[in-house]
Length: 497
Image (cartoon, rainbow, N blue to C red; front, side, top):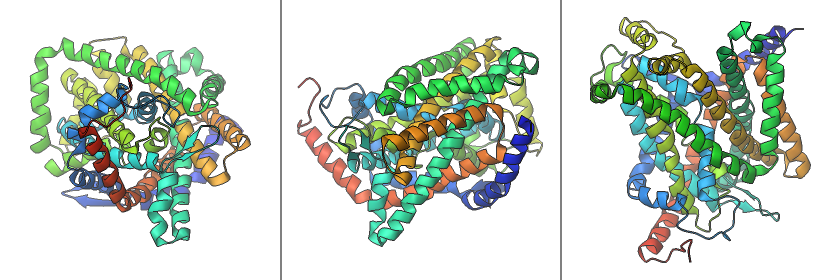
């Protein structure tokens, strides 16, 4: 049986499962002629409610969050495994990925430049969701005898749902664990390795290049899996050290490339911002008008920064701190970096560069068609208008994005595994081996139905997690009130003390 037969067999097995799960998780409604999944409304409404309850903490708490990341507060002897900065980069590495490169390009093609405005709005609201879930992730974390910690939804969801009885709490937390495990193994792992190999093959000559050979994908996958294994065996400390270097590096590479394109077209910047603002409220040719472009922008942001999914609190809970709310404040920076900065830079670059592939997709939308634009190609074409050799740079960026996502989701998925099967060195090593095998497998097959199922399972987490966050809001309010009172009274421990 060759690889194509293996792929067909796996797709055939998962197709009916993926269709059934997706039809529930991604149940769609139509407003103003635009069809969208209810999960998007669930995420955005939750973010708006949290922002209202905490009176826009993402605005008045932003400066203090930056101070925490810079290490101005706290002690190196605080319980936990990684610094605020390392926890932030670990979590950012799980959200900043191919969606920021390809997904945004699709959004501004289908929704026009105005989709960028609503992406930013949703990103700003999502900052408060991250604040709530990451505060709880640290608040209820468990410290083990070896100094490691386990936190996130696996600790606060049982408490949130306990009011309905232990069986309900166990079932709801179990659903979350299964869903996030499945996504981590497939969507957070296989998809990343698959796309990394695809882009590497593309820039080395495609099917005619040396990576077009039959065994190239297998060899590539084994090498990538070995690199992933070397990092994840060391746990969150190793992941934190790696992402602390990797995330700034990939951000600098990608944002610098954006600035090169923007700088070369600097006279077009005011006009591009004008298109983004006017397109948000008076879009031309977008199905559903203002409602349509708003939904497209919100959907892109919600799917990009994962605010409310419950994944980020797993990484943030490993932080060194005695005050849970400090990491909640730091976590607010994650959607800001992911959506407000990187997604906006991608969108602005495309709008300014105006590659022909993007104009063709926009024209198709205006003519009432439903194009399926290739986001990576659109973004690459935008950069190529100024930097003709950008596909090679993009291959490096994709590799960095994908690798950082792989190692961070390994940590998330391992926590789900140990929740389901117990925590021991033996269980962790078994998981790490299985995870690396998924990395190899992802490099040699294309599993569209498995990826669809993985995405559906990821957003199944949101239903369970956000409902739990609503139930735990009083706890977060108390934590924030007490902490901010100490800050005003200058009772916080400073790093130099």
